Amino acid sequence: MEKKIYTINQDLQGQRIDKAVAIKDTNLSRTMVQKMIDSGNIFVNGKVPKSSYELDIGDIVEIVYEEPKKIDLKSEDIPLDIIYQDDDILIINKQKGLVVHPGNGNPNGTLVNAIMSVCKDSLSGIGGEIRPGIVHRIDKDTSGLLIVAKNDFAHINISEQIKNHEVKKTYIALVRGIIKENSATIDMPIARSKNDRVKMEVNKNGKNAVTHFQVLKRYNGFTLIKVNIETGRTHQIRVHMSNIGFPLVGDMVYSNGKNPFGISGQMLHSCNLEFIHPRTNKKVSFEAELPKYFKEVLRTLESEKI
Image (cartoon, rainbow, N blue to C red; front, top):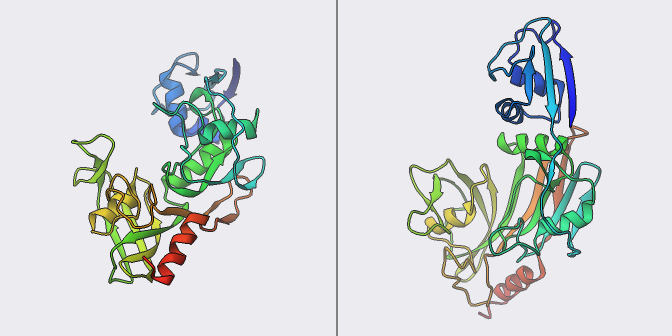
């Protein structure tokens, strides 16, 4: 357990305690500070304050840092396509079929298990637990780029960028049907289905979800599109495209998996990520080419032998 004590000067006078602590310790977000206050780990003049408490000159702030708990996850030597790596981040080109995070029915063999093998002791402690910094996810059968934060500083920074819609995510998808428009925006809220808890659905009472797409090529009965998402709702692209009548090829949940190619799982690939590097504050961009099976389907469509 570690403690830090600050005496407030005029620079932080009048600031809320949650904001001031986040300023003093850049490894903490305001949300994390608020949780620490609720847990009784932050004191002002020996008393636990409210998050809204405004500091005065001479106030003594004490922060108690608890050791992050190690969670029971097994490190596994699973092959990963690492596009980029430094002291703060990993960029992974995730293969189709790999679950990102352990859960019911998937305790092992996940991206997290693989990352634990790669990162060793360099892991984020966000949320009071030692764990790889999964700041966003893509579905099991979606392939492509994923950002992993290797420390709390990077985790907080990138999470804030995602929250503020500052991370540009670009996908390539193959859908059933021929889309007439060259480009369009789908702005439909998404919520979990009341009838099937595995599925998501367009629901006026759901969370805001915005998807932009552009047609790249039209085939005989299929359309290849480029997709950018402003929000990152669960199954967002799959739900939106299915809702407007153009479900993703191979999607077992939102299109009954119908396709003549024998593909199991949606044809969706995260091909590009752009964001501000948390350490350098410079814009970075990463690309991942389409996986082999995706290219083979497109070659089949090009030949029209379907």
